[in-house]
Amino acid sequence: MPFLSRFSGLPKYLNPVLRPLARFVPPMAVLHHRGRRSGRPFDTPVQAFRTRTGFIVGLAYTPDANWARNILAAGGGQISRGGRRYTIGRPRRRGPEARADLPAPVGLMMRKLGIDDFLEFDATRG
Image (cartoon, rainbow, N blue to C red; front, side, top):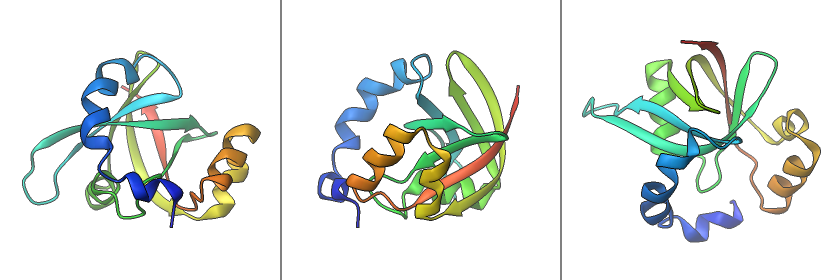
């Protein structure tokens, strides 16, 4: 269980503040996805790190985050990072081994915080 799970209510207050900035300040990013049942659009700020084929995002508060479930159910979505928008696809869950694909200090921080669950996806511009 991640250390941050104790603060699972925090995104409710942080997301409105981070959302406008996150799409322009890497590694912050905004995931654009739709609700599984409602079909309602959501914009969720996350920390997204580049991989060879796309991005990887730590599931900091819970491995069952709604945004992750939405992306997995839809088979993708979009992400805005560094002022660019990407289409994401082929979402897949990864475990603690994914930390090796992160920058070393970030992987260490994720390990110290007990973040063992990640979502990785491919990305193309547009």
